[in-house]
Amino acid sequence: MWRNIASNALTFLVVVVFLFGGALIWAQNEYSASGPLDAPICLQVARGSNFNRVSQDLEEQGAISSGMIFRLGADYTEKAGQLKAGAYLVPERASMTEITDIVTKGGASTCGTEVVYRIGVNSALVQVRELDPAVGRYTEVLEFNPAEPAPTEYAAFRDDMSTRFRVSLAEGVTSWQVVQELGQVDVLDGEVANLPVEGSLAPDSYEVTKGDGRGALIERMQMAQQVILDNAWENRAEGLPYESKNEALTMASIVEKETGNAEERFLVASVFVNRLERGMRLQTDPTVIYGITNGQGVLGRGIRQSELRAETPYNTYVIAGLPPTPIANPGRAAIEAALNPAASDFIYFVAKTLNPADGHNFAATLDEHNSNVAAYRKLEAARPNQ
Image 1 (tube, rainbow, N blue to C red):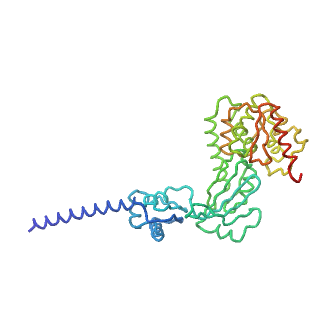
Image 2: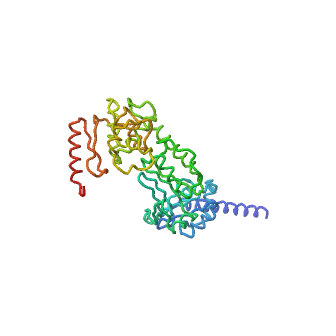
Image 3: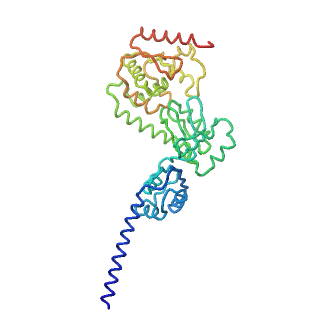
C-alpha cells in the first residue's frame, strides 16, 4: 500500500512540476508577446506610485492582458523597484517587457501635457502643449508672454500633478537674458547668486520639476556647455589661431550671432579664422552691439557711425583679434564650426537678400565682395516703404 501511495505521490509531483513549468513558459511568452493595444496611449505614473497601481491602470486602458503577469515579470527581471514617475507614450502592440522598460528607464517624459518656458534672443514665451498619442504630435493649448499677466487657464495646467515642465534656451541668448527670464519661471525657486560667465550656458531644452532651484538649473547648463566645449576642443582641427578654449568659445559666439543658417556656420567660421590668420580685423557688427548693450537685451536700432569708431574692447572694427569674452551663449553646432571651420579662402561675406534666413554671399577678394555688397544695396533701395 505504501508503495502505491509513494508512486501516486511521485506521479502527482511530476504532474505539478510539469504544469508549473508549462505555466512558467506560458507566462514568459505572455510577458514578451505583443500587447493588445491597437492605438498608442499616454500612461501617467504619479510620484510614489508602484507596479500594482500601474498594472491596474494599464489593464483599464487595455494595454496588457494580465496585471499579475506584468507585476511578476517586473519582479522576476528585478525592475519592480525601478519605477520612475512621469508621463510615458506606450506604443500600439507594446509588450509587457517593453512597457516595463519604458516606465523604469527614467529620463524625460514622452507624452501628456507640458509647459515650456522658451527663452529667445528677442523675446520669451510660455507655451502649454499636449501630445496627442494617436498622431505623436504636440498641439498648442495656450501661449503667452511671461512678462504679462498669465491667462487664468494657466494655473490649472501648472498645478496639475501630471504636468511636466521644460526650460528651453535658444542659441545666441546672453547670460543676462537667461537670468532675467528664469526669474519669470514661476515653478522654480531661489535666486541666481552671480551672473554666469558669458558663453558658459548650453542652449538646449531642460526638463525641470516644481521647486527646482534656479541656481541648480544654471549649474546644469554650465556643466552641459563644458562637456560640449571639451569634446569639441579635443577633436579640433590643427593650426587654429586660438590660444585657449575661451577664445574658441568667443569665436563660436560670433559665428552664432552672425548666422542662423545651420548650413553656413562652418563657412562663416572659416571667414573669421582666415581673417585672424591674415592679421585682419574681424569687423563684425554683433561684437559692437554687445559692447553697447553688455548683453542686456536687444539694441533695437542701427549702429551709429560714432559707435563703429569708438575704441572699446568689443569693437572689432577697431581692435585686432578677438574680443575679451564671448558675446552670447553659442550652441553645439556653432562651437563645432569654430573648432572645425570649412576649408576656404573667403575673407568677406554679405547677406544675399533682405531675409536673413537666405544666407550670405562669400568672397575671397575685395572686388568680389564689393560686387556682392552692390547687389545687396540694390535690394535695400528697392525695398517697399523706404
